[in-house]
Image (cartoon, rainbow, N blue to C red; front, side, top):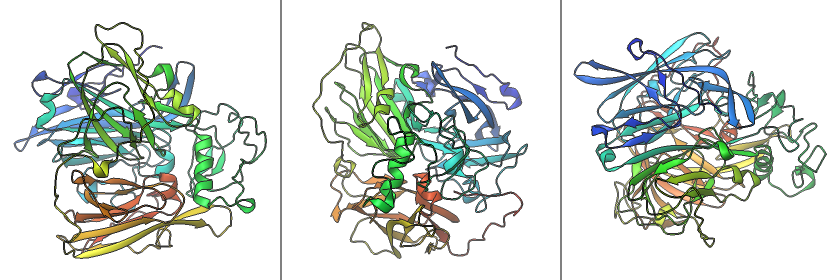
Length: 550
């Protein structure tokens, strides 16, 4: 398959998209940094600051998911993931979104503490950008690390269609890395293995009413993700309109688990950087090089990955450093939706090898990332490993105390019970916080400077990767026990059924911020809360735009 190269004039502020395999050189040229596609900025000097100015064009495209499978997608700059936005701490990031879609859209900067009016939430921080219009996002690059961006307009649908990309802010430690790769994980419904006849075009994730949903991931017409009325859906050999254990009225399967089983059965292809199987680009390393792998989960399922025979460290989680990370031997790690993990290692293997997915699905066979060792033979050097539990980040690292503690006095304390129930129609499950669905959930009311403690308890049957906009929180305890490892700062935390976590953050970024499940199907079906600052002037939206924040 030929590699596509999209080139624009940087002097005119147009983005240049580098072909797969191209490198961006960091400070001093020491780091070879690679993303599947990278945005070339116009670099300006304004008011004594360096401004990196980018353009992202939201548009439809045809995408080669594999060597024999093209799918229709929505993209930034014609590629999936969208071209990487990369800057250095101390610079200003400016991104102009040009909307060439047929529907409104926005960009949310996931995990980055941007000013509230740059958060990209339709009807809350801005009006969605209409077809043919532009909107410019601008914010200072204050915090280094790995982040990402995606549409937050009708987000369960638009992100699912391919509207996501990565944001990397380089810190002083970048010069220590010789190879820097970004790896974005996702899931697709390609209509294969019995799904080809599935008619799902206008997917209604929890009755959001999308104008279109045909990800190539789906072959679509009408589909309510909460509904069990699946029409002619033929799951392989089942050849009927239902799935075993999915008929809620005839089984004891909880509504959340029923919903998730259906979704997992639909999404039968796993991808890395928009490619699956043999189409995944190999990672090239040389023995002795220090390598950083920036993993981003842009999908709705957790993924467990193993680096067979290669010792490594988890250097950061959600862009925030882990203090004194221990060397990990023969243990996988799990990354939940919305999370980012930076993995670092000194390349030690003599032969080529593969980063493996350990998910117990047929789709996992397509999520294998080849690692090519320069000077080694072409033959893969496999290493057998016994099954081991994934790394527990709550007991990882040796950093001691963080900013917050369980015994501190807090200005505000909140309880968030995460649950589920059948909707009023008796068919569609809804996902709740404290028994309510958005917009009927009481917000977290704070004042600037408040220290806030939140207890999250999952009383349902689904995982809930809870994401707080505009802030980082410290994880203080899991299931009633204080963390024993490094102080763990995150913006997305996966709360599994039966688990409870206590987290704390400082209210240091005024505005109105979403706090929601980043399985966006769950958010669309009600699991959305907000953090509301005292005195915040609520955004006045234009009712004619058609804002859909989740």
